[in-house]
Image (cartoon, rainbow over all chains, first blue to last red; front, side, top):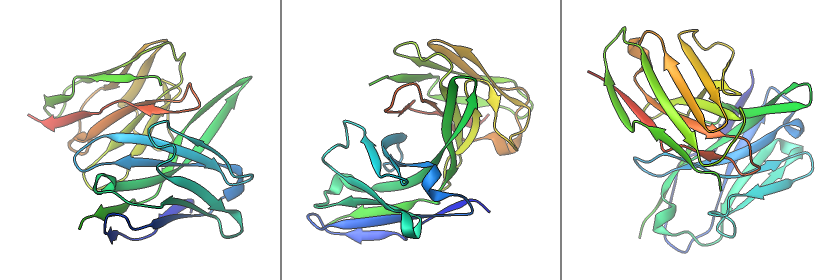
Length: 125
Length: 107
């Protein structure tokens, strides 16, 4: 079964660091981009960034560039999202998701087809 | 960034109704448009990719159309399990963006 399994919920204080994980299984982890999506309480989905585990090529949304770091360890099929200094405004559910692609001629259509179950991060003093 | 705007933000409908949700992009995105369904406490689920292609396993009552800047998601006959929040998302640019969501509620 193709799946992404995320690490468990975290409760942290402002200023603390954190690294959450997303482990892929059932497919070739190095062949698909993995994205991260934030969902603040009661709000919509925000695309944070994406990484290609095969070579660690990473792209960030301007809104999150410099605020988080996305990385991957292909030897253990795991992607990461980390913060060096958390803020209360980082309180949210964070999802990882696999980017699949369908090639039709010269066009590549892509979307997030497999999602992790989400990691709730709560930052409070 | 490409901005995605959905309408309406919320919608009340009854089982059996035909429902349409609209998504507009701030610039042309060809057919690089996906639709997701999210139920409370759950991860989003891909319904439609490339504007009109039904993801495997998704019921045929869901359909998508459009190209350029204007897109629609249609549910032909609402079922009880369809009450959820729906998001569009563009994959035209390297930096993907989502619409703000449309909450579909039971009337």
